[in-house]
Length: 408
Figure 1 (cartoon, one colour):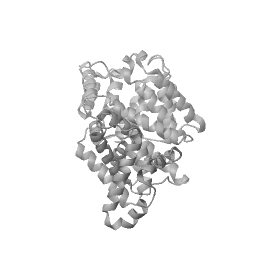
Figure 2 (cartoon, helix red, strand yellow):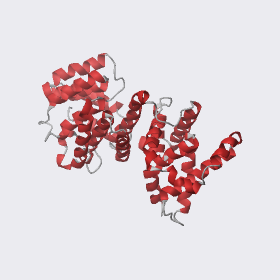
Figure 3 (cartoon, helix red, strand yellow):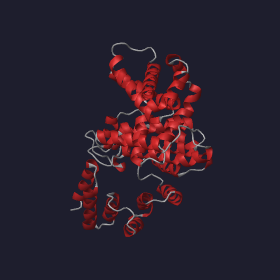
Figure 4 (cartoon, rainbow, N blue to C red):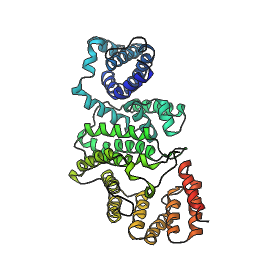
């Protein structure tokens, strides 16, 4: 077994291993460190001697590393004696990955990784590292930051969890639903960065987006009675369904009205619609409403044939339960398609007057499109050029400049 095999096993089993170790040691940071040491050892030993049970090997090795670390902590000798008195490490492997306890363990791990005491950046890094099994290098590459930056976020995150005394357990039922929104927001941030990168020379970062889908699918299996979990899964699946048609052969963006809809992933659309049906059981929340908008696009044969009136209504509903300037901006785009650019321009100008999206390239981008449709070409060009200057993604910037050039 080579490096790729180790990485594949780790990606699949990491959450269960770290979760079981955390329950065993009561120390989230120690568990993650011990698991990483086991992976490092696997990279050396597996090519020479492949284990029959790779996941069990990682679990047993990580458990030994955790016990060694506890032994070295002189202040914890009593605790080490208690752990050492338990059944031997090798015979405890099966108990530690008992399927009857896996669901609660992994769910608890998600809640710990997304705990409110952590900064948003630390939540994302820890979730991708300990739940998703991504390396520091993979996370750094996905978010275009340095490896030391990612490692620092992970280290600070673990120290913060330890200092705050965050227990490794599922929150009480009353608190769980409130905390669940934080878990969902982390997964949403990860997916959003994958579906439209905020910076760099690629429009999409599919690996990151699909990792978010995998984690959300896991959460949906662990929390099947939570509609918004299914809503987020539906939104991710329906959005990712368009990935094959969103870029050309050279990686350049292909706008919605120019996309070959035959290239959309209809399997993903089917999965998304199924998840949306589950999300609809008790009324749609913010993610479910966004998924319903994506489903409306997915069911339309063309931009012109899209039910824009329905999309406007869905954005209005979304704005009432989860108001934000981005929702208002998206509603303006839908209004422009349903009722014309003049009404939409009034919405955008109100956003500008209230300075609700300062420094964002999205506002001048939409405003430029609306002005162009109204025949106000010099103003439209100025807005699109401003949007290009504000945009950090090179691919998006090239599209904006190309549009501006057509208005000269």
